[in-house]
Amino acid sequence: MVKILLVDDHAVVRSGLKMLLGSKEQLEVVGEAADGNEAIQAALILRPDVVLMDLNMPHGKDGLTATAEIKKLLPDTAVLILTMHDDAEYLFRAIHAGASGYVLKSAPHEELLTAIDTVAAGDAYLYPTATKRLMGEYVDMLNRGDTAGTYDLLSDREKEIVALIAKGYSNKEIAEQLVISVKTVETHKSNVMEKLGLKTRPELVKYAAKKGLLNFE
Image (cartoon, rainbow, N blue to C red; front, side, top):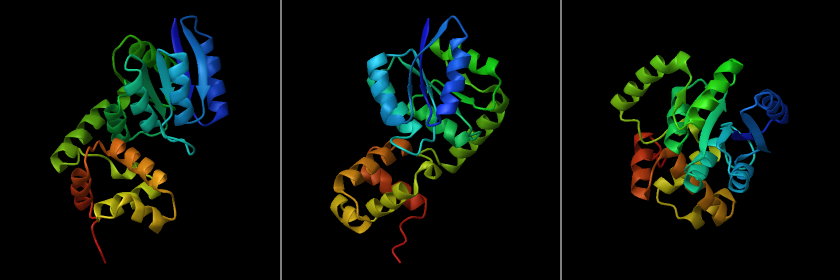
């Protein structure tokens, strides 16, 4: 029996998935979550075999951040991304975060079921229709030297904070300028570093320079 945790901010989507998966004897939906924060807590309590994870959730942590944290806390739990984003960069970031698979919401039910079986068995699954194109785009990214992260996946607030950190502002100065708490700045910074695959402030400054974010005018 494969235990599954459903993570999506739309209750209707979760309900439909629960009906689909519940009709299969070898699958059991053990819980649901509406955002990344709930997903992490539910995963720690329920210890699912597979987390079926949406990427974009407006409240709490997003799918990429939640995926990375779940994999850090529960390395044996497979995370399968189920998203509307048919985009190579989202796929690369999902894999970097530790996801075992990536499936589009537009995919046939049979493909989703196959993906769940595949990641539950410890293997990786990528939706087949775009594999060739994704590999081509990955090669292009390597040639551009754009492997440090994907700027477009950051929220507007996170982009602001990246620019300010890179320009040398302290967390306190950023908090005062954006009228938010220092703790909120630290949380955003942590999420940014996770999404971009960066470890240190110098790496962030170098990344910001490459993106043209160091214009002080």
